[in-house]
Length: 342
Image 1 (cartoon, one colour):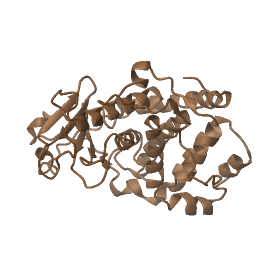
Image 2 (tube, one colour):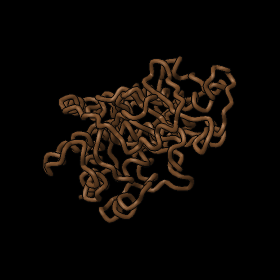
Image 3 (cartoon, helix red, strand yellow):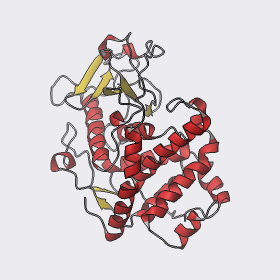
């Protein structure tokens, strides 16, 4: 991967600082995989399975009934609807890119190492997509083979999918987040998943049209602009632009960079992302911070329950972000004001 001088400086600083966190993660105990019987009334309805060979990604779907896939075209006549195959292709390509760009594969995390598959269910929820944080086996569902898996639900009715949809990549990145940290604050998870899905979209993370709001310079501004917002896009896009002024060329292997959907259109719409080395180090640091919080409160490492989404974690998460920014060595008045927030 090639970087601008500023980006290279940031990457080297973050790479060395991240060595501790990698070792820390490897020392964690592996999370067991419970048998999930709560979903057995829904999951068995998805009677067909498509497994992308060698990927560990399985897509479950049905061709009739309420959850049927909206488009059952099979242009390549391989017996699998293109909608299903393209969901798998987007997940596989985004996953390979995330891994190459410095994020740990969720199946390699201590939380999910007992799992063998990433399962994508089409049509089980009313929204566009949903990622689940707990691994599960489904002993009462024969087509799952008794294997432990982590789960994503994707709508079976996305209009003209894949088109400009990147929801599969977005929900997949939630599994990466959950593999690192127990913190489940919306202001942290949703905009950074939006940041990550940019691997397959045109352009990198940029401020919303007409907006280039500076980073917060006080705790009051953090509260009003970030902590109390479910999707503080401007905050994270500003961090992305400050940590890396120029887009980074991903330099993916050609077979990945030019991977296609079934109709021949490219999965990666361009070859650029911004600030991924910074973002990966934020999540490495949050993993270490999660361990600290578990120990302080006597909480099982992967069973925080409702405590995951408590606003009491906001300042602690902020401090992690500030330390990561500080280690980059990037400085200006705006950054210094942000780092001074206490």
